[in-house]
Amino acid sequence: MKEMKRKSVGCYVRVSTISQDIDKFSINGQITQIKEYCQQGNYELLY
Image (cartoon, rainbow, N blue to C red; front, side, top):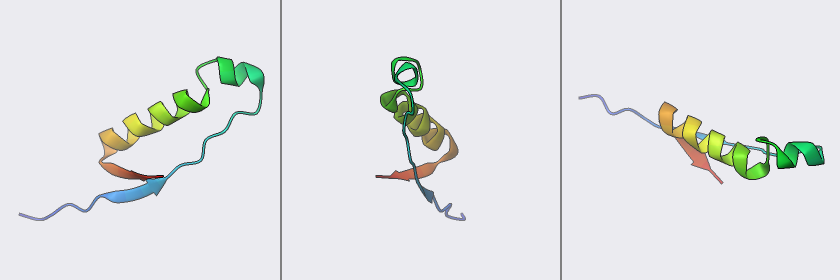
């Protein structure tokens, strides 16, 4: 069986306005979305 390699990815998150921080685009919200995306795509998230 062929071994599948996991791709490693890095991420950069930020907010530029207070309303983004309050809304779903907060730092924690972005990190959560990125973690879910990496899990679905079999990516290794580097911190």
